Each structure stands twice: as C-alpha cells, then as structure tokens.
Length: 114
Length: 113
Image 1 (cartoon, chains in turn orange, yellow):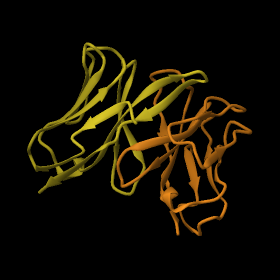
Image 2: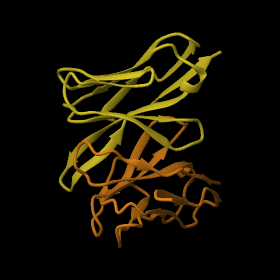
Image 3: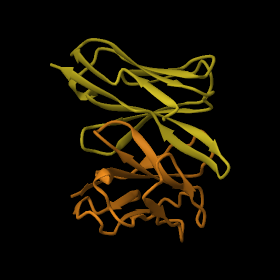
C-alpha cells in the first residue's frame, strides 16, 4: 500500500540518549517535513526537505537534525534527548514544495523522554 | 511565534448545532489547507483553497478564503459526533530554500450527543 510510514510508533527514551525517528514514503514525493505536536494541538515544523540532498530549518529546529540521502527516506535525529522533546512527531510528504500542493501525513511517533 | 492564528482554541457544541473555526494569517495567503485529526491519529486532508473568495464544501463542511486572502473560515453545519477532533489550517511559507508548509495552533472540537 502506497503511503508514508513512520517508525517506531512509540518510544520511551532516557534523557541524554540518541534517537532516530524513521520516515519512509513510496510516492516519489520530493518534499518532506517533520513536525512536532504538543498537547494535542498545533503542528510546529522542525525541519524540511524540498528535494533529495537538501534540507532546511523550520520553526523549532534546535536539538534536531535531519538528512535526505534519497527521495524516499527522511530520518529525524535527536542527538541528546531532553524531556522537553517529549511530543508526538509527524512526518509528511508532498509532490513538490510548490504552492497549493496537498501533503500526506504518517501516523505519528509518540516519544516520551524521561 | 506562528504566523497562522486559529480561533477558537477549543469548542464544545451540542449535536446538531452549526459552528465556525477561523484561521487568520499575518501575511497574504496564496493557498490555505484544512486538515482534520481524530484524537490519537494522523491528519486527514479536507480541502485546499487557492483563490480569494473561493469556497469549497465536503459533506457538511464548508471552507472559504476571504477576498483579501488573509483569513479562512471553516463552517460545519448540523454538527455530529463524527465531526469531533482537531482541525488544523496550514499554509505555504516562502523561504530561501523554497516553500515550507506551516500550520496554525489547531482547534479542538467536541460534539456532545
């Protein structure tokens, strides 16, 4: 089934540990995004990539890094997790970064940093 | 701070009542997206508005983009428990690297049977 897949679904992580959240899409979308959702409300953009080999900082990039080695994968890494990074993380993709292009979302990763 | 402001932040309505959610931008909107999220799940695309004055409907949900293109409203007619969830508006924001997709703070809707 075509779509966007995130892994893991949930994770409890000790503070100070390194963690990579995985995101894979098979729709050949050029643009991909990582968001965090706190308290079940709005989404805040962490990092994005408009095409393979390029990345950009979003609204809340500190403490996170991304890479885009190929079209399909866009992993998000927390180098040294802190409790304030406890959140639900969503990955999204769309055909391109052109305006008026619908984005598709993964089911989310619930991360708890203790 | 986010450039898309949604109001209200939360809303409780009786089943059968109409309601409106607003999304206001500090900048001109060139495209506005509405998504719905059921609690604990991913986001579902509702509709996209591209032109000032445009109005679209999906079942009992209607969204408009105002003429000045800085505000959108989402109206639900005769609300049902199935409408409950979080509604998010999103927009493209230009950056040196291209466009990024940002969202408002969300509106949590509860519908009481």
